[in-house]
Length: 584
Image 1 (cartoon, rainbow, N blue to C red):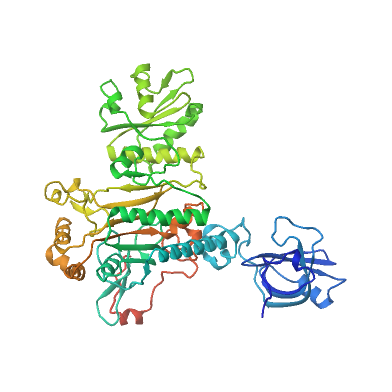
Image 2: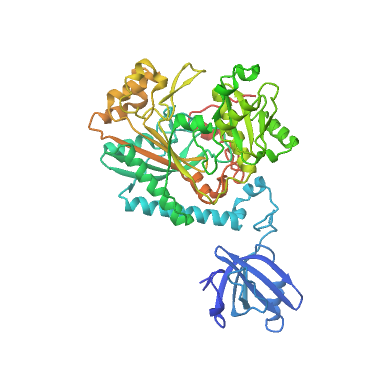
């Protein structure tokens, strides 16, 4: 037995007990006549003491040569610590070591294994196995485990059955590029890694499973960012014989349970907002409602003056920044520069100060009088002491620009408290969206999403106006889950494929197995998938997902620790009947 206790459990009640511990040397302090060593494992730290009056010369010499991250085993007596450390759970005791075994020596690590390390992100990713020893990463992984256990427990109690679905599947168009896997046994043919288990979970409903879930890896070959990885994990769920309200209630329950059990937070209300209203009021379909700054559309009170910038714009829209009148002219100019960055793309910004005496001062005073500016304040909800920021231009672009500004201002003002949780549902997304490049409609979610009841006929006359029976669950400005009521009959699914530009032959080749299944009595069904990585990060008070993934990839999709992806040798290429045609 390597240890009788772990490094986080010994207390004053263990004094005068002989124990055996094993772990890594966090650090040591050698005073010549006495050596202290902090021993670390997953559970915590315990201080070891080697004293020349009470420790043999051989063990004393060994202790003086211990380096950082050496793996050791010690046996000794628990004694009261002379200088107690209230910041350590084991701070009342230390171990007077009588036996020391070096299990493995270690080179000096390339960065310090401390909470505040000196290692940059790329270096820590290269030595991720060392990074995991640090408390922030270790605790994030333990936190993820806690969340997944709560998910499994809750869904199991609600009658859901966990079913695994295949990873080697058929390539189907679902909105992102597939990762493909060549088949040696079927020359010239390829599997795809699933972007989601979408069709399989629908087939499980056809199979009568009724309530399914799976915590499952999914794969999308798309551009990466802080909250996106090429392989990610979903809490994938599907239910039969349900309507939209059943889905919303079921997964409100799961989210409420997680917030309570994981964060100790009671959230009763899950507001609901229509997609069109979310875009109009917040400029995006995943609004952060922990704070206000709702959009005020100013077309009616800004046009028909002599200011052509507004007159020529499709949309003039503003927000009221709380206490923003305290901003200096220099600070406002920096805001204007911020919205003009290429990442945001605005051409400029008009502002209006709401003075404490009830008067207004605007950057376009030449064109608008006090009565005009008072109407701006009324529309945006601005009060004395606030600052009104106004953007104008193309409807879709300007909403996205003002949304980015709203989030930036909220960050600067400290309005995005990670300890506050504000969930909401966004409902009634468009079923289809027009793609200028391909000049045809694409499914906004996926081709299996059902239109809202009564809107099927609109597909023939006004496809862009059809609403989807779809919903997203948003938490603190992040989409944490999304789903829909599915199409469950062959005729409607065939019609959807037709409007998405599939010929009958293409639909048959891609999705014939699903269409065939619908002929054998498919129940009404629908579901929702949570993005587990993002959900865990937000519950953990962060928005970057990497520290909640054991071995993440960088923004180029590379695992710098194992150096993947990597070339394969000519013999493997030959076995797979592949020939490379690399661009020079």
